[in-house]
Image (cartoon, rainbow, N blue to C red; front, top):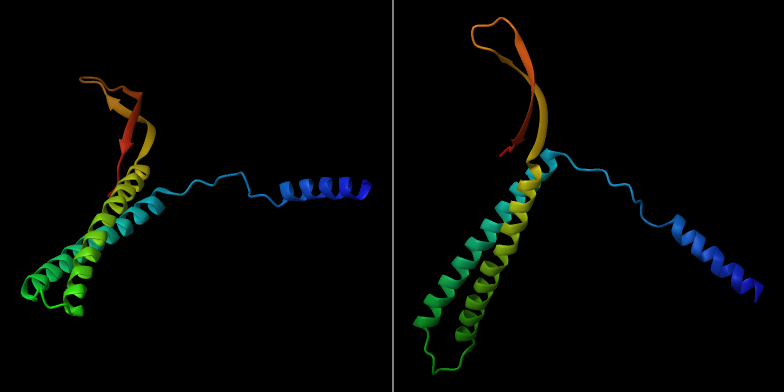
Length: 134
């Protein structure tokens, strides 16, 4: 009984020690911007592939004989289905790409110099701005 209790306590302590690190290192704006660009390219690739597959499948399906049961008609049907799936799967990729582009925008706080009119004195005024890089 003692060994079971000690083993359980040891397992609970070691699992906490080997658990994932809770400190999060934030990524840079460039990381999110690059990730957004790659996902945008992937989205357009999936969309274009879906359109091309669906168009080729529709053209081939309309030219094939429907009453003749051969595998050529089935291939065109699968091309239409694959094109539709590829086209629809591009939508979540575009959404994630837009979210990463939004993460790339940063809130900046600066103190800028604004000269008064007809004066030699310049004032430091706090400025809040949003900087979006594309």
